[in-house]
Structures are given as structure tokens and as C-alpha cells.
Length: 300
Image (cartoon, helix red, strand yellow):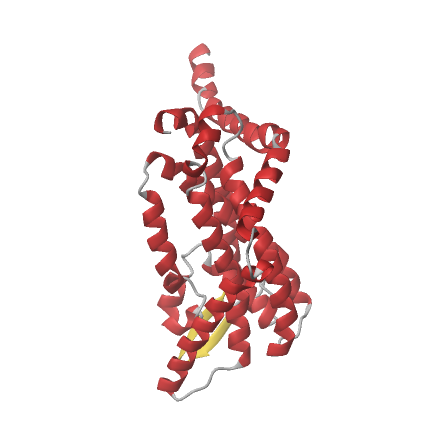
């Protein structure tokens, strides 16, 4: 009986350790240092806009450039195919360009957030998660300004808001969680391996071609659409386009005709897949970050 008790108790210890780490990360330390998180976020915002001629217009510049580039690409494709670009397609790109710009900006700043604050990391104790999370929250402030602008512009592009647009806040929260998880993981990895930031720059530069921002997954056929949806951001971006621009309920599958073939444009399982990446990715990254903090001083 003693041996049996010992063997049944062993698997419970890792679970208790994980729960304890999550409690420390999510409740105790981050809550006690919430003022520091807020001040660091304000610092990043002030630095970004200090003596900036354009002011808050910078918040909509990147999404606007993405939409302009995507429009040129779609016009070129339409010209070669003898078709045309509908206003609804431009609206879809605008809706997806905003979260993509948020992801790129947040990851770009968060990856070097630890190495860029070495005096704080090496001399003062605080939960180091605050640094990549403050960079992510500062970028979220920019994206909120951009979201208001896009929401005002969409009716001029022929979009009529319906009840399905209520999916937008849910998808925005999931995108924030995916981004925060990636920020924690990459910020930690860059402290141990300083070339991570260069790899991230390359991936962010070319990642837009592997993420459905300029186009829809259906354009790649049945197999290509499924492969495109393996990108954790893809279901969330497509969900925004379908719910806000197309007025589609994300709990209902959508099959469309692409040429002579039928393509599954949307499935509720895509939403579940994106949500799983958001939740488990954030939790896993937070655990990796928290358990690596003890080694930070050796690599500073």
C-alpha cells in the first residue's frame, strides 16, 4: 500500500508545481507589480510619440501601408486574371492589416525588451514578465486608435455592421493572447541567444506572405486553404474578416465555390484551433519564462 501511495503521489507533484507557478505569475507577482507594468507601458508610449511630427497618426500609418500594398497586389492579380477588386476585398484587408500590424509591432519591441533594459534586469527585482508585456500593451494602445479609425472607415467601403461583428472583441482578445505568448517566449529566448532578434526580423518581414492578410486562404484551393490555416494567426484574422465584413456567424461552417472546386472557407474548428493556441501558448510561454528567470543573471 505504501508503494502504491508513493507511485500515485508522484504525478500529482508536477501538476501542483505548474499550478503554483501559474498562481505566482498570474495572481501574486503581476498583480503586486501592476503599477510598474502601467508605468513601463506609459514610458514606451511617451518615447514613441515624443517629438513626433505626425503624433497619433503613426498608429494608423502601418495598417494603411499594409492595405495600400495589398491593394496593389490584388489589382495586379485582378488585371492578369481579367477580374476586378471589389471594395469588400479592400475592407477585408483593412480589417486584417490592423491585427497584423499589432502583432509585428509588439513582437518587434518585446523581443528586445529584456536586453534593452539590462540595468533594470540586473539590479532591481521585479517580475521580468512585465517588460515584454508592457511592450505588448503599448502596441495595443496604438492598435486601439487604429481600430477606431478602421471602424469609422468600413461603412464607406460598403460594410454594414451586424450582430456577427460582436465576434470582433473576442477575436481581438485571442490575438492579444497569441501575441503576448509569443512576446514572452521570444523575449526570453533573445536573452539567451542574442541572434533571435535577427531571426524574428526576417520572419516578421516575410511572414505576411504566409499569413492571409493580402489574400484569402480559399485562393490556394482545398489543400492550400487547410495548410494556410495551420498558422495560429490565420483563423483569427479570417474570423475577423468573415464576421465583420462578410457578416458570417463563426459557429457555422462556410463552403464556397472556387472555380470548379468547393473549398472549406471556414469551420468552427478553426476558431477552436486559434483559441487553443492563444490560451495554451500564453500559459506555456509564461511557464517557460517564469522558470527561466533564475538563469537571467548569468546571461545579462
